[in-house]
Length: 453
Image 1 (cartoon, rainbow, N blue to C red):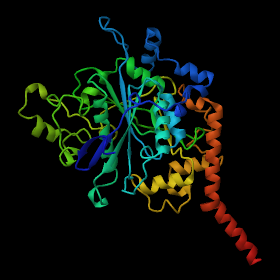
Image 2 (image 1 turned 180 degrees about the vertical axis):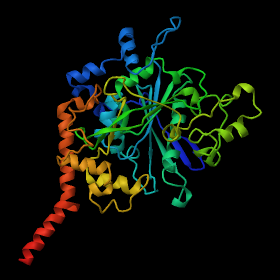
Image 3 (image 1 turned 90 degrees about the vertical axis):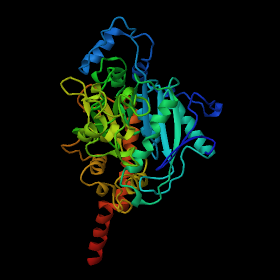
Image 4 (image 1 turned 60 degrees about the vertical axis):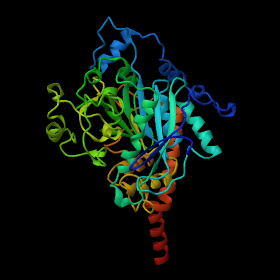
């Protein structure tokens, strides 16, 4: 790892490897991800022609209340999109689902792995240091399409105690590496940056809209105080057959390059103040945190040229997700169809779910001994367990095909893939309930009753 390009900060170091266009994948690891596409998937994914269908794109833009570019003097071309996400124990299932939606669209996919979790629990490298890791990396390089540069970079924190940070800080610090990868790959101020988790994605249709439409927040000359375009996101819990009804997530998030740290102009967008080491972590109160710029105006912009009034700072990658300032986007049809999808907790076993909830974010110390339904009994996992058991409530759609609207994730348009995932999740729940849940308690009661007799 020491042979890789290194950039260090007070919280840790990033190590930057080669991208997928800079290496030769061994013949034994080469595969064609399109070989398994169904006819309808192939039709939807075969849309990367350099020739732009103007009438089709006008309809697409109008469906999201965007105008179509009207400057006839400029050649019509697609914006370049740069993506960033952290990667850890995400299942191959969820990576295949999101990467299919994004196939051959992104210029760059920046993935960052760490060897520790958010509460400093040690974790083995998944994509570095072994023959199996190399095979996994070669697989990942090919999923997003041959036109996309996929990179796997690495983060090692220098923090040693949970007293040094609050929950989610390590998530924020680790995401900082994306802007340096984007810069290495030639990102410009007129490109678009997208930050998400690996289990989230804009729909393919909306990604194409972001590339071509007249999106107000992508026009040049932004103040950068409210630059975000974020998804109206349909949430699936552990299975494509288990979708929330009437509830939307609000990620991923997109921002024009001129408002992004390391890409935009600091003379037009002077740095703000943040909680840790001046330039890391959350923005301080009044320095752009939750759209309050009162202290930024008084202490940073004051005394500068008059034309700086109303300007905002450049955005760190984690701020795409946690700070306010922008607009959500959805289709303007009668269902307000979503512009994004969230494949939440699409793990392959109950143990993987428990590891996540016991070591990441706001860790639950009892996650290792609770049944899945009671790890998060007020919402996500309870809904997923009930759905697997066939108990749909007023909060869930009755099936994938019953979801209203005109947007569906492309990967799960394949019925075989959809049913295979649901069957696997049902097996996970069945085993978990037998070991931890109500089935085990019911057996105990039955045994107890027999003994009393």
